[in-house]
Image 1 (cartoon, rainbow, N blue to C red):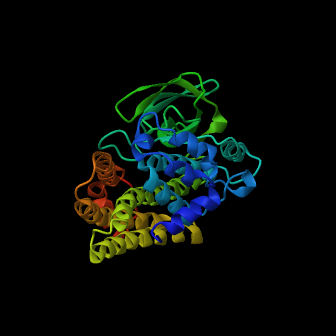
Image 2 (image 1 turned 90 degrees about the vertical axis):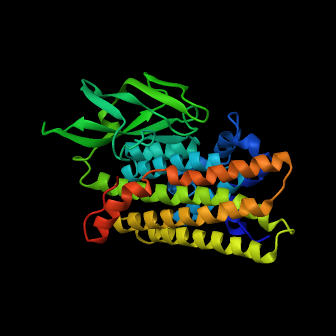
Image 3 (image 1 turned 90 degrees about the horizontal axis):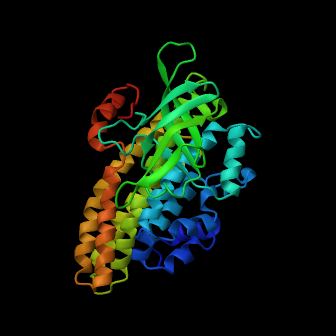
Length: 369
């Protein structure tokens, strides 16, 4: 069958063995709390997907990465979402390390060659918090910054090797505060993990020392941090959209293989699913063509919200067409349908972006709520 053929071929090329290993396991096992999915992802070289080949990575383009996430989401959506957090963090680190041989570049190579996992400690777990509202605090010490706070990196808390956290720090000139990005090793003294719910764990930072070379301040980045965050958020929207398109694709695939369903219904679902993916591919190509700027970030948001609307039509129809199923298949369909709806829960919410997008269309700057 041709559906998802291109996406799975991309996985086979960049991460050999990953799709076969996931396909061999039941969905419910892959989605469970003891899922082997993260280890399978590591073993396939997944952590180095976005790292340049010169730094022992797989050198994936944005289009490649989108297709990988869709294929991954069709096998195990929770792993696709969790690895999106890794790729978002990796894209941030790559942007912080433009020069070969510097500390950031060595970290990129270390993550790729060691199949390490990264995640972010931005404000996602706090309702009504802006995506750039730091959930952690920092105080200056004699040897660097002491970071305190909590974050809930989805499914990666116990697997992460590096945490990227946004913090507010005092400006070097003493004039107020500024945003900074801190790189924290999971093995740092003061980092602990505890249970925080059915599908997440809480990471607590208690006076964790971050040396100056692992902290990037807004004022010290020559505008690079603003550009970097714009790029990172465009990547986040793109790959999170692809992950949820994959989960929906798992439902569509089941319908396409069910010959009890009329051809018109099967083709109708296929057309809408592929149309949504084509829109996301347009964002990926913009990133690949010139690097994500403010315009690309805005476009990634338009497409993400458009895909949300498409999924709200595709998923209920797919569930209805699948009809009566045995208990195992029914559980899988129910899980996938619930999971697809999660795209609307990731920041920034459409309701929060209505004003900022209206202002941007009126020639104002784009702000992220």
